[in-house]
Length: 291
Picture 1 (cartoon, rainbow, N blue to C red):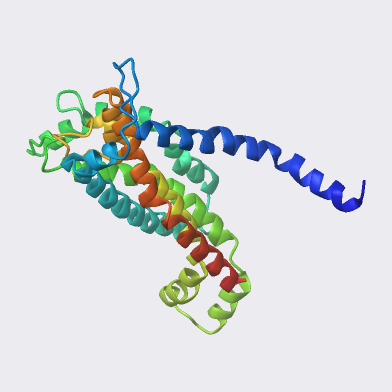
Picture 2: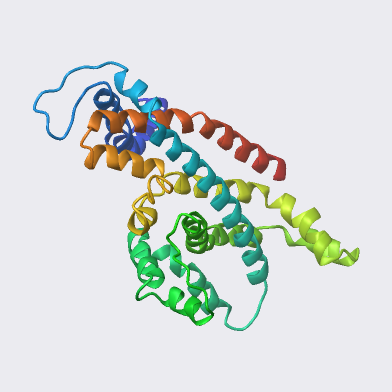
């Protein structure tokens, strides 16, 4: 056996676990979902008939689907930007030596170690109108507010999402700050550059790849948000806070239509997949520019 053949065999063997993982958890569900989306399969039917693109047309004509698309897009955009801004400010604040830094870092990353569903239950108890701490404090100041009313619930969900996931972006951006070349900042200090100017003319440009990575991961996670919102509001009032994940879940397990749920999932996939190569190309380009 030649060295070239041995090398090729070694690459296939080493890649086998990843290929098996992709086949089982990505390719097979994708093929199965595509097939179900073209059928009338439901939780109660004993027969399965091929319906072609009927489920796709029915989903695209459903106002609840477009309401979920709008809410998910706005929720993803706002929470991603907010977590990046607060995560970066927090990283700048912590990126220096001070007593108790290790303890503070541990406390800061605690929220991302809690399961989202459990976090939702905790938020539900704290914000409960009858027994919650926050409504009780607001009542003390004469504010009798129902936080889950249509006037406040969207803003409330955005705030909770930012509180929960800012530590995630903080962790990535803090690691990015730690990896920046220090000689650039030493030269800026010798030239008398102010902290404000150093931050916006040196730190921020050098951190662009880290911003893209943190923003991309956060956006993907926000796009598939389900646990916290479902525990807190169930997608309501009405469909006001229904994300695409909640819409698909209700189609599959409340209405019992697996065909419509699969069609909605495939449409979401078609909306998101074209964006991924653009983001990856942008990230790799920025990394190459920095290097």
